[in-house]
Image 1 (cartoon, rainbow, N blue to C red):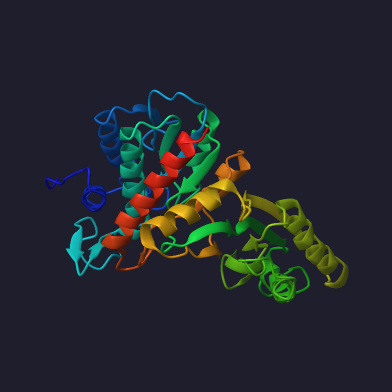
Image 2: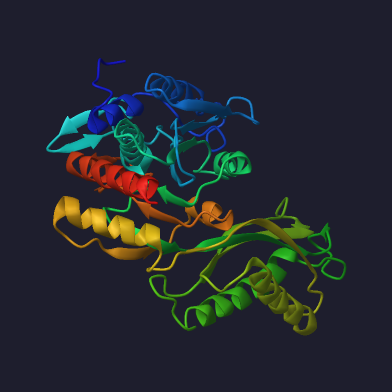
Length: 385
């Protein structure tokens, strides 16, 4: 590794970028988080933090670093993920950080090693200032897939409030959508292609389901808009069916995603989809289905008046002279898991571009700003009486 000043947030970002941490659930055989977890663990140990390594899934660790010597019970949790998406499609050397024109280029610089570096430095600076409370830094695995890292952390650690340093372009995110995944298995009847009298074409029946789901999708978009997030949405993601051209397909599976907004529960959207399918059974001859529920995550919603929101607002203004933009995001993050666990959490992170894209970068100025703001938020929170 290049000889970096690991107490500088931009140079720490470069060091983190040099470590291949592609999520091995997304890319079988990829490096996973072990090497970067080792680095982060050693970094915090050298700076007098208590460090816990959580590794229920071998080779997929998360690191939790906690400051020492708290004299009150106030706690704040900073969360950031160590994993990245693939480097195979990156335009250039994905794990060779390039500093150019005020940016740092490389896979994960924006999503989200820039935020990870900022919160690590912020926690260290806050601890050096002699905070009375405790800062907890969760560097987690698997956010880009199923988020088992944050789930594992929340079984062992809690806090009063949380901040997730996902890239928000220096905005303050207090709401985002959730999602529910489903497989709809349409059942037909296998038969030789010449025996229309025996076969039931599952793929053709699936066409009726797709039309009905499209109608529901359009209706969802007309519903009352939620502040920052507009409405939920629904789309078909994958369709699979059939074995050969000369046979009636016995089965066709449609995988769908329902993006949810606050007020929409997994149970609600499940029944909504089930009603569509029940209507098809009643109106389409030989329509038969099985609905299989998949992964579901709640949306995030934190009050604009919450203490953690006001703290980020105050300290962003003090460091930049500007008002922070309060916003919502349509994508999902681990902040929702923290919120569900009783830790009201917001998102605040770096500026840049290229999450999951062929070229990715974070701006150096934003990495410094995020570090400064989070440091002040941690000190402010931990020192209140």
